[in-house]
Amino acid sequence: MNYPKFTQAVGIQYPIIGGPMYPCSNPELVAAVSEAGGIGIIQPVSLTYVHGYDFREGIRYIREMTGKPIGMNALIEQSSKKYHQRMQQWIDIALEEGVYFFITSLGKPDWVVKKVHAAGGLVYHDVTERKWAEKGLDGGVDGLIAVNNRAGGHAGGKSAEQLYEELNEFNVPLICAGGIGDASDFVKAIKQGFSGVQLGTRFIASEECTASISYKKAILNSKEKDIVMSERITGVPVSVINTPYIQKSGVKAGPFAKWMLGGSKTKYLMRTLYALRSLYQLKHASLDEAGKKDYWQAGKSVEHIDMIEPVETIIQRFADKLI
Image (tube, rainbow, N blue to C red):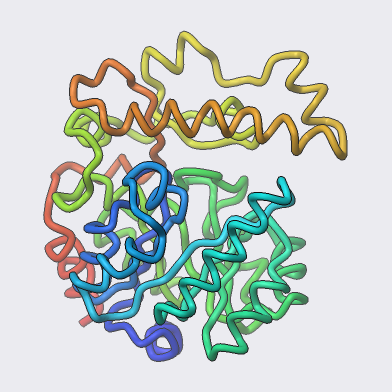
C-alpha cells in the first residue's frame, strides 16, 4: 500500500481529499472533510464569490470548525493580470493562516512551488496526461492529482488505469481523481497503487454541502450514462448532468467561440468570457432549491451514489475498508 507516504506527509488520517469545487466547496464542507480525517480543499472563488467570505476570514471560519490540516486550490492558468495578482494574494494569505497543502490546476506551478516550499508546504498538481505531469514535476511539485475520464469538473480523457501506468514511474504520490463514488471504488484505487483519492461529486451529496436539495437529488437519480461533457462552461470540456437545460443549450462551442478558442492569444479571452457567464449561472443553479436552474456539474461516480449522508459517515465507511 502506498497511501502512508501521502497521509504522513500531509498529516492526515485517511488518504482522502475533498476536491475543490466551484461552486460547492462551502466552508462547512471543507472543514467536515478535514475533521473526519481527510483533507478539505478551499476553492477561493467559491469561498469568496459564492459563499460571500473575505478570504482570510473564510479560512479563519473554517479553522473554528477544525484544527486539522486544510488545503487550497490555486487555478493558475494564464489569465488577466488582475486575476493573477489576486491568486498570489490568496496564496500568501493562506500560508499566513497556516495552510500548507496546495493543489495547482491549469497552469505552470513553479512560482507556487517556490512560495509554498519556502514555507515548508507541499504542492500537488492536477494532470490529465504524462506531458502535464512532466511540466508539473519540472516545476518542483511534490505529487500529482491524476484526473481521469470519470471525474467531475475538468475531466481527463484517460482511464484511472491508463493514468497510473503513465505516471507511476515518476515515483511521487499519485492521487486518483474521478469515479470514486463508494467504498469499493476507493479500495480499487488504493489496491491499484494510488496513494490516495480525491472526491468531489460524492461530497456534494452530503449533509454539510450547502448545494440545493434539487442538485443533490439529481446526483442520486443520475447514472454514469447521464454525465456529458460541455465545452460551454470554460471552453475546456467539463462534466455535467445531462439535464433539460443542457439538452436545450447544447454542449458544443459555437463557430465564433471555436475560432476564438483556436487562437493562441484569443483562447484566453474566450475562456474568460465563458467563465464569467458560467460563474454566475453555476452559482445560482447550485443554490436554487426549486431546481428550475438545472445546470449542475458532476462526475461519473454518480453511478454509485444513492444517499445524502454526513461527511464523517462517508469517510469512515471508506476508511473501514483499509483495515
